Length: 196
Image (cartoon, rainbow, N blue to C red; front, side):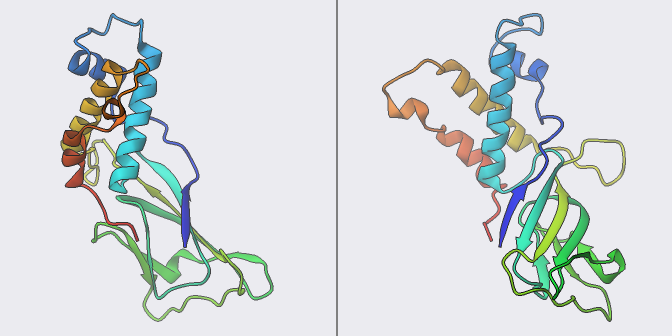
């Protein structure tokens, strides 16, 4: 099993306007470091995602499997949608599993995909990565009932990390400056999902 992000997020869980007054004591009119701040927001999101195993904003992922297990566990949470399941048939041709053949279970922290009632997974060619499962994961901030915002604990950890990096952006010989602050990891630990 392997997986990778196949589309980058279209937005970030924090904006430049939120970060400046919260961690830099600067107002929105101060634009001198906007590029640096924008880059730190992306880096803090990537750190939080890698550390927790969660996608913070909607993004598409592809899971690669050598064959169909009885239940497919999706490795990134929270799952928004299951976009497609493709596989190489016995002749080596790529096929798409019909949506009515499976169902997405979102009840666990990590989403799972199982066969629909009275269905079986098709046979696959005996090669690596014969099965590709494409899904969208992330938190959605919106008006619909199912939307869930990025947890405040994760946003707070990102703000603390951005402040730390911004205040210690000069080159230094101290290893402790380059470490992620313990308080950031403590905040993120409650959201951490064990790796499969």
